[in-house]
Length: 282
Image (cartoon, rainbow, N blue to C red):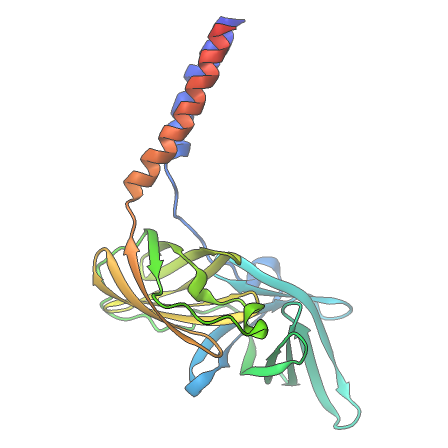
């Protein structure tokens, strides 16, 4: 019996070491993967800044599900409501993106435009939006001829400096990105995709590399974000993050991937050692 278990432990070690190395590889998701209609467009926020918008609509009749995507993550799903307003004979469209947020617009052919509302007690206009039904998803960002050679793949620590004042209860209930402390980034050719980790769970984002950094967008907990980063060196970047109401400045510092993997491996090996020790004591 002990011989069999010992053999199992030894043969499992190669798989253990493989699992101890953190993989940053990510793939973006889009509505086309699920057979949904693909709708692509943008929010128009403060000072005319455009933040990409991507969602998919299921089927053509009945209860049609809407899915909003952000990088490798499904940001939200709800239901598509469409019908003619008998007051104006206009084809109206609406769908929710959270407990307190909603898209309301009008449809003309394959184009929907309108206003994005958000608010706990009273919904207020956060942004205007426009989206068009397309046959295939295309990156909303233009690729440059000579992108930066820096490969940002890895884990980054974020420092926002002074944080936003959340003494207003209305702001306290909104998701604010300056509480995020860690980015995981992955570069594949000119594409960049990542995840942010904060109090609001896992936030996905994606975009492209630029001549001196990267640009990407995200939609998380009813809030759209545009992230524009510039590398200071291989281990540091400065970024501006724009939402519907705020502009954040942040510095990102690369964390040692080797250290993370060593710590994780050590923890797993310690657990294995204690298990084997207990087994042979038995």
